[in-house]
Image 1 (cartoon, rainbow, N blue to C red):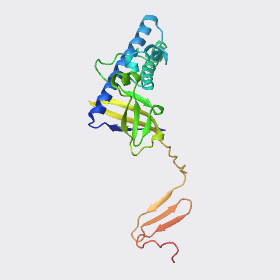
Image 2: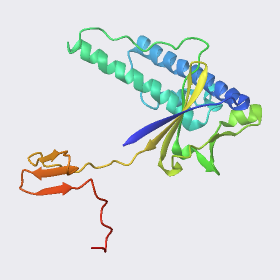
Image 3: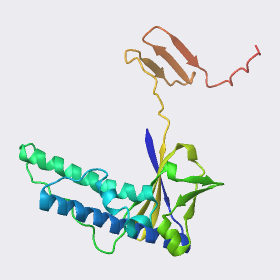
Image 4: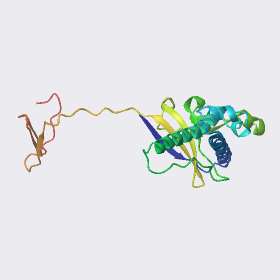
Length: 227
């Protein structure tokens, strides 16, 4: 079972500048992937494969400024949206849905998009997470990573993904982690316990199996080992 914890990025000008740049590059790379997939479909009626966009754009600067796994995730998300569209087109042609689906469209010009990092791309350094950048980013700016605080209530070993979300002129960090599943006890719905809150006794309890107990609220409980 997976859960997600959101943390709003505070007023850190250096970190915000890095996140702005990354999310802008993600936005541009997303639109490039959409352009290629749309043209492929319009001109040849061919569908895009899961890894096709990575092969096309792996030498592009928008791809190379990002860490490779983050760039791959961006393009695979584009490919997944088109595969969903192909499935809807097939369903429409078979009469399974009423309205003809619309092909994925471009994101608005000048925007920002999410950047995601799988956990094996991240490293824990003290109480901070090291988030890597692409080789081109290091060559341009002399920067190969940035650091963000690790939430104190989470274990790094349980972390599965880190997402950087631009939202309402702010940035939100999403920590996707594995959550232990709590197994609820199996209750026998045929067993019933009647509870009566009285004046002399705090609780008088009787079950449909013939068992009973009384909780005396007037006297403190007797400590173990004493009569």
